[in-house]
Amino acid sequence: GNSVTQMEGPVTLSEEAFLTINCTYTATGYPSLFWYVQYPGEGLQLLLKATKADDKGSNKGFEATYRKETTSFHLEKGSVQVSDSAVYFCALSDPMDTGRRALTFGSGTRLQVQP
Amino acid sequence: DVKVTQSSRYLVKRTGEKVFLECVQDMDHENMFWYRQDPGLGLRLIYFSYDVKMKEKGDIPEGYSVSREKKERFSLILESASTNQTSMYLCASSYDRDGETQYFGPGTRLLVL
Image: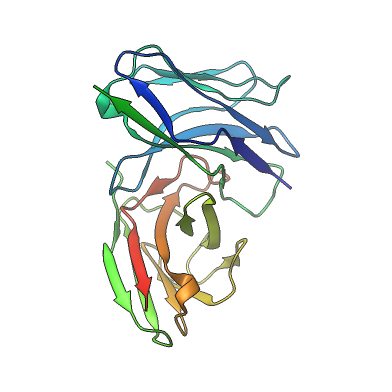
């Protein structure tokens, strides 16, 4: 079956540091890949997505590139801010998994940014 | 903007009670989903619905049921709450394109005593 593996957290960084959160996946078809973010006390929000190999999703300074050869979708940001402190979820949608229509999520990575 | 609302942010119930969690979306989405979120486990799919009166089991449906009488509303029912159902429950909706780009509600944190 499909699965998503994320690096365990928490990840603790100082403000303006470079961020990488690793995500790898297993899927039967050619999935779309997503990063969602959950701020404290809130639901999940879509951060970025990529629908095919070599696509780069970007939003709010975050980027991730769909790497089919390494089955990865690592999240990066060049300079984090305190306001980026949240839990980040990697997810996939597999069109070959007919009827499911749902996302498969990783376990989440908590990011803590210190001033 | 898409809006997904959940009836309660926090609930405290006793073991054996019947619990209703309500979710409403305002964007005419075909698909609606219920997940539970637990530390270290991410989000796990309980049930989903792709049309009115249609429902499909997700990965962990045991102990839950759902109802979708209207397109905009999707209810999760715990027939007899147990302590292992203490969790954060998240509702989501999407257009009918294989579940891409799901929109989430704020979540309901349920404590079963």
